[in-house]
Length: 124
Image (cartoon, rainbow, N blue to C red; front, side, top):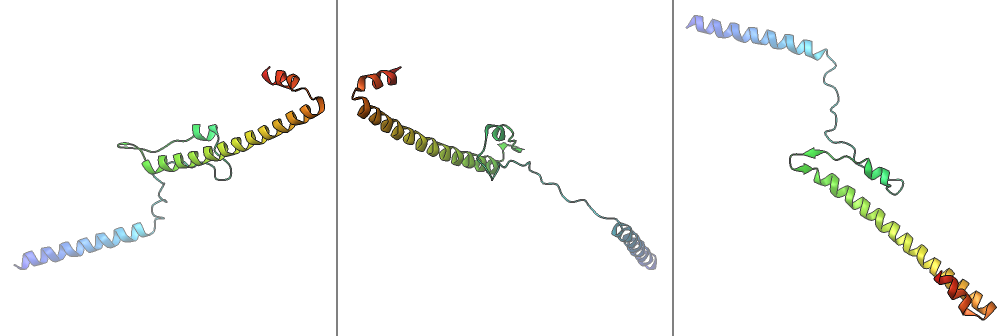
């Protein structure tokens, strides 16, 4: 029984010495480097509307079942917003153009009194 107890005691002391040596050695190293993110940047610019070049440059992380859904959903929501803003702006410009065209048409009609000349230019 004394031999078993001595063997266990020697094993514990040897393990403690090895652990202390490893802890001392590893404690002096700078450690692990900072972790790299496991995702690629997929953001669109925040300071301006997205352009075609921005969309062409997008890359989504590939996962087992396709792309990361959160990245795709966020990007699609941003693109939908940018398109809505552009459509609203285009509509406002078209409305303004229509008002200006009507004002010009009325002004020409008042001066000439002949609507046929202006209508013929509109059709051409």
